View 1: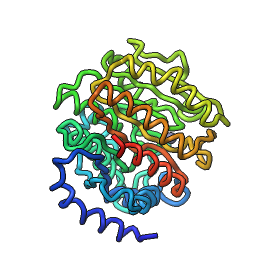
View 2: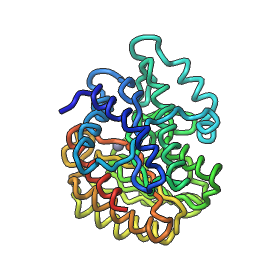
View 3: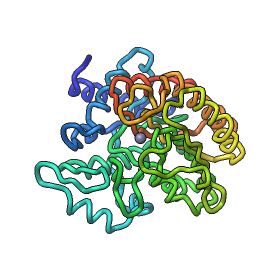
Length: 333
Ligand SMILES: [Zn+2]
């Protein structure tokens, strides 16, 4: 085990060296020091040690070639492509000078939470830039707070800003990417992503998730205004067999047919069998398998371009193993 400080020092030390290697296409890992400062307090599942466990796991020799980058802060104009001024003002006003400030809807802020959320969005944007500029085949962003529950005008479910929506809109604005697919295998349904892209015929949102479970959305009949939403709900106790069946029968054929120019993954690992919040029974290898299946379509349809963003996963050691399996697969592009 290494300490958090040592992990951070190692991360920072690799940035400039890895930047020099940027001409070689590979997998980019984006993280943020501010992820460690956003601490909603004891007993909160979304804790800083989720990220330190991942950084510890990435010290293994097989990750030596992984490029690493510190997440920059997102520009306000990028956040405003998805969220309202009112939400940003509310978050600024609710940020405490010391201690904790509950905001309702499963969100608690400390003095650093808003800057961590701005860096989470910035990490997603930086990963998008790297992939779209050809500096990396694909990228995994391990920041917190996560994003897929956040609505345009409301933070909820540990999420302040909808990182994947912000990155997708950035890709569209800056690189004229037309067809964007978002695959979400978090145990919870990404209501914020579905809501934001409901009326967008050029964005496919496809999700496997447990139901019934928070936030209560994601039924089969929620298909979007242009049949651009695909939900594949799973039942409590379902294992990798049912997960892989849902992928094969509902998610992957639609993803392929959609012919995306760019694929995002809302990579939540709380469908793992040991996760304290979810009731599914996925194993590390299930996360590897789903990653490889998405990569096959990315290779065929969009020059391997995948940007994967950490969402849930609340058993830190299991999360670290699942993320390792996911990144190892991404590195095979
Ligand atoms: Zn989740």
